[in-house]
Length: 250
Ligand SMILES: [Fe+2]
Image 1 (cartoon, protein in one colour):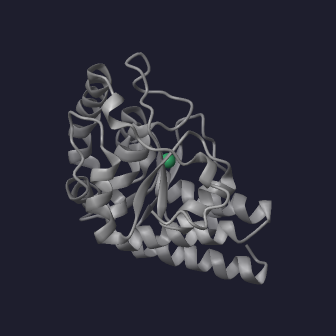
Image 2: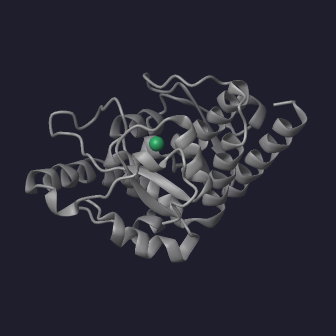
Image 3: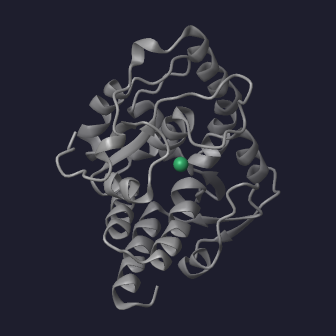
């Protein structure tokens, strides 16, 4: 790990003690995967499904982050960095800029399979990490992290967080004439994914201007999401956001 310069994030970095997960926790992971994966085979972007195999996620066992990192790092230079919980924004940006994805290690209980107030390892790893095997996608995340880490402007960070939310967290993509999902909040929530795929959510063509003008409502199902044509479009959107931030027009 490249922790030398992680001044803000360093106190939050922990070690995943994989041996302490119980059989019941592994069973909860297996149940979460069983509920959502059949839908993802139909509705997920092919890059997500390929990434799932590349990083070596297992359907019946919680992920061992050291083993995932061994497969992921040679591919894109990214890793999963275990953290103690929800991070201050500055620490989150700092880690992304260093290609380290902050990853919680706790798992929701079997009594709250669908809704949790904060990300857990199912959201962070099952939801996010398969896409981290994709180089253009991860370059977009790194650019986002660098840009947010380099500004003190709340307004710029707020706007950029919308670009992140409507791509990395809840992004859709058109592939072979169909809308497919890749955002982590769709991958890790059966309810969110089916809300979109059952037609209960408007889907607009991705437009940076519209995305930047669309506030985030984290505690309700989406009524509007955006579909890109390619992952290069996300990279270009981050690049354009950076240009606007630099010249004061974001
Ligand atoms: Fe997330």
